[in-house]
Amino acid sequence: MPKKKTHRGAAKRFKVTGSGKIVRRKACMSHKTGKKSSKVKRRLNKPAVVARGDAAKLKKLLGN
Image 1: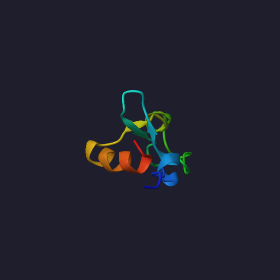
Image 2 (image 1 turned 180 degrees about the vertical axis):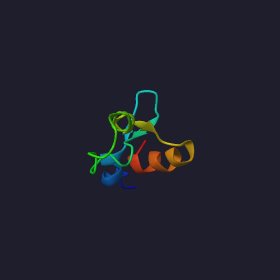
Image 3 (image 1 turned 90 degrees about the vertical axis):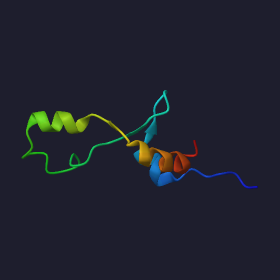
Image 4 (image 1 turned 60 degrees about the horizontal axis):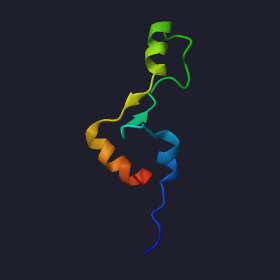
């Protein structure tokens, strides 16, 4: 049986923490940040934990 490959698109977007949670970036931070307040930009800059339902699918893609 061949080795299982990691989905490279998912590997670039998601990271697995030490406790096994999957972390993602928040949307709306890549451009048009001039009109957003500092408070909003600070909130969007922090990583977010992926929802439990999506995490199961992502673990398969990430090979964990």
